[in-house]
Image 1 (tube, one colour):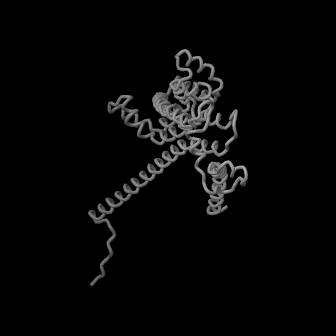
Image 2 (cartoon, rainbow, N blue to C red):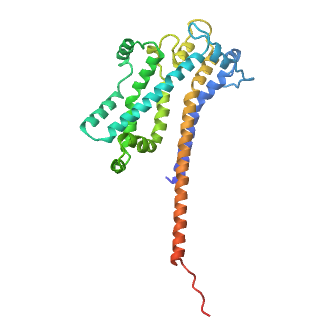
Image 3 (cartoon, rainbow, N blue to C red):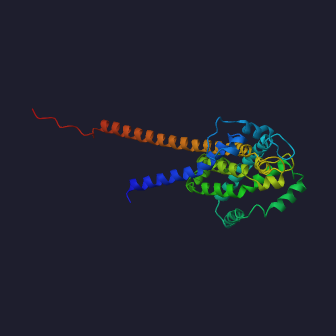
Length: 312
């Protein structure tokens, strides 16, 4: 198959996949902008006319979730309070642990890496009872602090292995040269490893943010009343025990809850694109400078091609 036809086929497949993923989101958006009467009488794909944003306002501030009627705003802020410190703690400890596992190759570090890999396959349901017991003994069960600790340490195996593999890709002679120059391990980590692993930081931040924000089982089990994350609030809102099911409010709440992960992915993608573009620009500048300097040297040395002069 020619390369042009193959690329065209791949573009069509990617476009079809994008439409398949975007189609449910479009239906959610259209339904959230309809009134209850339009949802009952109009077709599923009918456009809202006129668009009604009352469902979005109700989902944020006045929808009844359990015994409170304050919308998802409280649970939304709870999720932000949970995700920011747990993300900082897990990323920092994961980077240090990955550096410790990569700086020295031995049987102990290989065993620790294998143990962390095994922890990735342990379901969260298996560790719920030990986490409940530990948090209860520490007096953190049913609090936001306890849920932050649970999320911070639950993501450590993944982040530690992610940073370990990234640090192992850095040439060993760079670290040896830094040690010969007198740098300690802390300075090597801060001055060499971190600048070289910025793409890994961006990827780990996006993935860990998504894991924590979308978590349901830890928030349902470990958070007390009034400390529920937004995923638990969405589940309660979508399954009311009394009253009428308001699909426009439910879908508006789901779309509101999906905004932070989308923003994080957009920022991380833009930073990756800008970093790649800046590297390509620096490379082109270096090649241009090198070629210009080479031409200047040839002119000085007289090695450039000179057109022969006709004899008189």
